[in-house]
Amino acid sequence: MAGWGEFALAMAVFLGSHALTARPGLKAPLVARLGQAGFGLAYSLLSLALLGWVIVAAGRAPFVALWLLAPWQAGLALAMMLAACLLAAHAIAGVNPLSFGSRAAPFDPAQPGIAGVSRHPVLLALALWAFAHLIANGDLAHLLLFAPLGLFALIGMTAIDRRKRRTLANWPVLARNTSLLPLASLVTGRWRPGLPPLVPTLAGLAAWALLIWLHPAVIGADPLVWWR
Image (cartoon, rainbow, N blue to C red; front, side, top):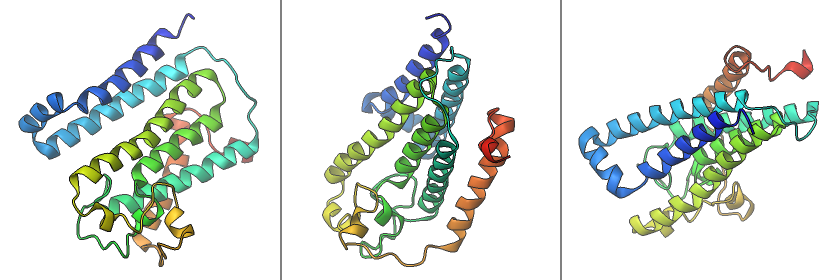
């Protein structure tokens, strides 16, 4: 299929970069040379650059429609993105030694905060972002882009759980009021949330509004087109 070459290459490089940098034999020398913070920064910048390339390549690929778009899909995608922004904001501001994206200490297992919503709020936010954009597009290239990214985030949750069980001696205590499935600890009565912190909530709302505002100029698609 002519025109798919760049997209296939971009996806291969993007996924390959994550697989290679997760290998201890490659990661350890890089961390030793750059430091943990330097490696994290370099890895984040590389991931963002490659993700940008994949998204651009998907837009250049031949358009093969899979389903018709409707206002409810745009509304659902906006709601999912709001949840993703709030999850990410609370994760960055919160404490959660059971995943990444948050401070590790001090952590009170009786009041797990954002970890009570999901043990892996950043990965859940990434999955919501991917599936929201899958719903709002409806063509083959974006299905091949966002479905693997969403599944990659979900699979990453179980992978981190396995690693944390091995590396955290008190993992059962730390994780007792959290859950892998979103809000399962609330449904089972293991977690009773209080009022969410105001600053992360406002930051998440502001990030959501900013993304909607910038989307037409940066991506070329207006998330509010159905209501204008």
